[in-house]
Length: 270
Ligand SMILES: NC(=O)c1ccc[n+]([C@@H]2O[C@H](COP(=O)([O-])OP(=O)(O)OC[C@H]3O[C@@H](n4cnc5c(N)ncnc54)[C@H](O)[C@@H]3O)[C@@H](O)[C@H]2O)c1
Image (tube, rainbow, N blue to C red; front, side, top):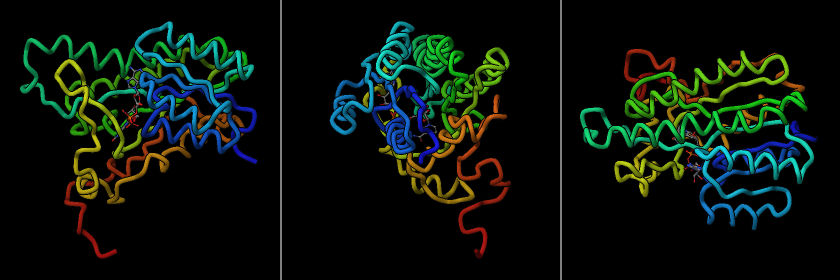
């Protein structure tokens, strides 16, 4: 018996990386899943792999009506909605402010904040009535960049700090019926893309030497797989197992917050 029997969940950006791992894990735990995703190709692969266990909507999280569609179609097919996972995002490839061309700053700001922040707001607004009906919950993907500098440039880091604010504010506004929590993972070799506005829409984070970087940056000294983070979402989605958690965020980034002021890699004999 899984932790999410009878749970119906929506996952945005469920086509690859962490979102795809969440689709698989939620299904394994007994949930039914709706996915909002902009890539038709990734959605087709999901349909081939999971058939009628899922509902797929091709759309853009920045468009409110696409969020409404995934809520409507998921409830139409599975009868209810218990969990909304806001997860789709883009990364700024750690582009420093001094390196952002002045004439691209407006467009870059809008793109980053529209996808990473407005996307989650849209999802929460589209899902709130159905979640209130079931006493459900929201889980937003944050990032180490929601807490620490250096995991992105100023726009990604600011957008993920904004997500921390959203979690707190919505937990406050949506209680007592709906819990709102977050999961803040660290690095993963996924298809996480850059902003189109600075010509990085086709670039993916997996081209970076992430295993080396994470060995230096984290106490656990390893690059996690997307699946390694999914248990934290299952915990928050499970009414039985996290009834008292709202406004909470799990930092599961391999220990960046306790890495200290000395070199981590090679710094001990364990
Ligand atoms: N990869 C990392 O190192 C890392 C680290 C910390 C946090 N995160 C966070 O994890 C989450 C998932 O990212 P990932 O690494 O799995 O990347 P990913 O690109 O593999 O997955 C994101 C999915 O969202 C989709 N998407 C992007 N923009 C969209 C839009 N406007 N509308 C609809 N769908 C859209 C993409 O097509 C993709 O399938 C993000 O919130 C990201 O910030 C990633």
